[in-house]
Image (cartoon, rainbow, N blue to C red; front, side):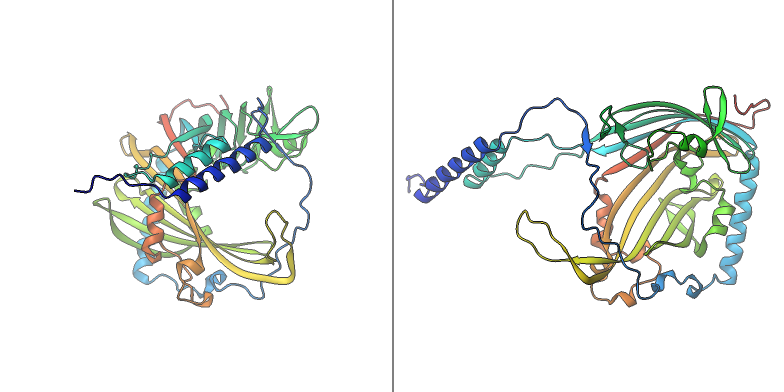
Length: 427
């Protein structure tokens, strides 16, 4: 039996000593100052060398909605029946009051590690690799916004009472806070209490003390101009039904229905609905494929919504640069690119009164995205499928849906009553 111990080669000790020496020198040169500042300042210097995207040479094929085949006679009848059922259910809800909350979560950021400690741990693991692979820790989330909302409605009149404690807007946008020295900061918690009123003409008002004022005029009166809205569509609990604030029949009229059928979902029969919508914003083209799985025993309210947004645009090409040097766009050089992003809305439905269903909990998450050249690497962009459904996605991409999302929103209904005899709006 050989009882000799394994000896580490001498060059490893020399390399380790040189590495430690270089780390020590770097640590002496780079020693960050301690600070108690909790916010981050935003630079107001305009972007230098910004190159706008040029228009596409031709309209993408997926924008030509007229070329998408219409529904068959059988599917048209099925859609008409679904619209009739949804309209009958909507008429049951004459008025009501819903108290709910929305919580915005963001993936927890790892604690900052001292540069010396980080290099030391990396060197130690390289010299003596661990024998066992440690299991990944479950992803944790930090709360970055909470909204407590009381919503009242009576036909076309809606009232919102919104109490918020947040450092980001509900849509994930940063909140700008301006200091006395006229510098912008973000990442600072903000407490607000606003009341909004929307009439049948869809004009939005905000209560200023005891006086209702048109929202757009109130926005214009602010000292600081900001593109971040104080009112979000998600303040309405009805947004969480369809990912849209309108009723079902209005939503259908605004989109092109491309498929409808009966499918098995979570062990029970559901109506599957697929709609399509296109838009152009300046030189960027977008198309949304929205898939619904709707529960027939719960007023055909959706249990799951998958929204795929396809984007096509020309992007400037940049020259290769050395490390730490700024790259510059190459004049007249552009690349055509198409990408696909997803988000999903999943609902747990509850029956609040006989025949009256409404979501009890809704979770909205932003899922993975990818370029279409990666999803369909064996096809030219002219042959990409027009309608991007979940069934067409490669298995490796669908598995990305299981990864923890960066942001997620959770809506919870705390109380909901409908068809009240003496409901007053506003209270």
